[in-house]
Amino acid sequence: MKRKNALETPFKNQEETCLSEKNLLNREFVVVTLSGFIFFFNFHSFLLLPLRIKGLGGSESDIGFIMGAAGLSTIFSTPAVGILVDRFGRKWFIALGGLLMSLTTLPFAFLQALSFWFFLLRVMHGIAFSFCFVAAGTLTADVAPVSKRSQALGLFGVFTIVNYAFAPFVGKRIIEYYGFDAFFITVCIFGFLSFLLALLIREPDKEVLYVRGSSMLSTLFRKGVFVSAFVLMISGSGFIPTLTFIPVYAKEVGIGSFDLFFISYTLSALLVRIFGGWIPDKIGKKRAAVPSLFFFALSVIGISFVSSAIHFIEVGIVFGLSHGLVYPSIYALVIDLSPEVDRGKAFAICSVSFTFGGMVGSFLYGIVAELFGFHTMYILAGLVCLVGFFVFSFFGREGYG
Image (tube, rainbow, N blue to C red; front, side):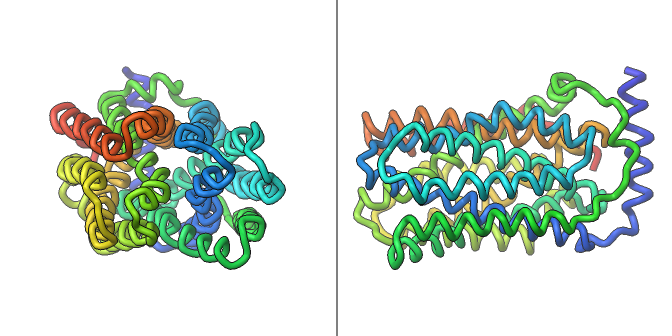
């Protein structure tokens, strides 16, 4: 117990003193966020990969298997990345993520039939995601004022989630006019640009990065962290499969403009992050997350009743508003509950939990959709998300502020 206090109290007080005068929109925050934006344009462009898989004769379970492969590799790579960024710093892992994403995007332009390469390349995408997301998210928390940590993580997330709409919107049109080969080459270039931009980051020197912290398991089982991680896993089990299957589901119900869901989701998430990003810091992370989790579950269930483009937009708005607060609230809460020396591990735990839920959801819900249809799949996914709402309502806790 003494060792825990020795880690938490001095680092927290020192951090508050150093960051109290720091502006939210400082140089490093801007560069890291921009690099992340470009990286995730590449990464989220692969929301269109199910269309390619389907076009090559794949089934719904093939889509779930291939798309879930990225999550599978993330489960194993993220804990290691969390430990490494605490030990060696953040910058080079952000750069490595962009480079790896670029190199593993280009081969898709030369794959004209379904093969094991689809699975293997998606595994590499998951590793690239771990490098970039954990390192960039942790560095965002490092350079942000403590009193605005939720807002900083929310703004960082804005430039991540904007690509849920922007990347499929642009990618869809590249595919329509020039085909999938040109599409893969284009997004490959964006991955490389992310790598180049990451080289411009000036990471602050911190001796605390080289102090031995807690183990990954000790960080996970710190009071309040485990429940938050569990709820993130439940949320991920609804979030990632929802986005994965939207293009195919829209075609099944006869709605051609599936990108309307991505656009409405993104715009609403942007609005709540920009104009309501202060809410978790002001009223408390748990108070902000609980109602958001409830409406998030309802929005997933609501997708099963979509019958027109207008319905897609309406559900997308609720989906975006709710998830727009869930993500920064719970991530910031976990960081609040962890000493600075374990911050990379804490962020990695959040990422792994969310991605693990998404991976399991992609695999299982792909099978459910194939056997029982998408309507049943989305209702089941929403009901599971309601479990997360009840768990966090009764067992979640607030952090330090």
